[in-house]
Image 1 (spheres, rainbow, N blue to C red):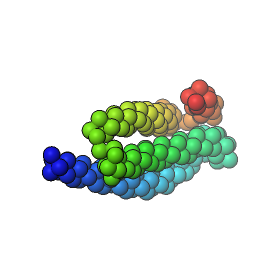
Image 2 (cartoon, rainbow, N blue to C red; image 1 turned 180 degrees about the horizontal axis):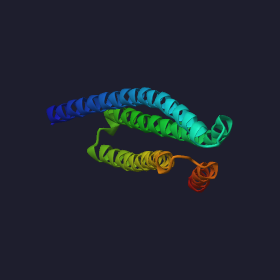
Image 3 (cartoon, rainbow, N blue to C red; image 1 turned 60 degrees about the vertical axis):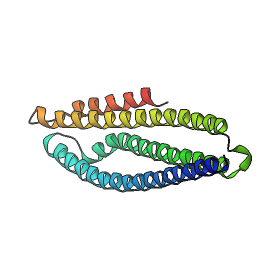
Length: 184
């Protein structure tokens, strides 16, 4: 019986080490994603400059007006990036806490009972499912917002030879109103 318990403890520790390695890999992946996001921000800035120049040439829209109109959308985008970053960090932290809790249970001779481990694992799974759903919803909402903005800008640029200032203001206003509605 003692041999079975030792084998079980050894197996649990191996699984726990694999879980901790997975948490570390997820953290590294998130850090890499932050780098990619920063690169995409630079590309977006280039795109904004091109749109600003095009609108200044095609429409009677001053660059200063464009910058003022876009400032709200840019602020919202940066806020969303921070929200996503915080949720991802929270997600990794949640798993780190779970691994610590499991390690404490495995290392404590009093709590090696399968029932206790099962209850803790169920709690961790429930927390993980909730965190995953929240994170997925946040990322999906952000992607949808970005897609809508890009589609509207393309529509403005492709619809006509000249872009009317009122059309541009209406498009920007639509996103500003949507942001007011979607902010929790």
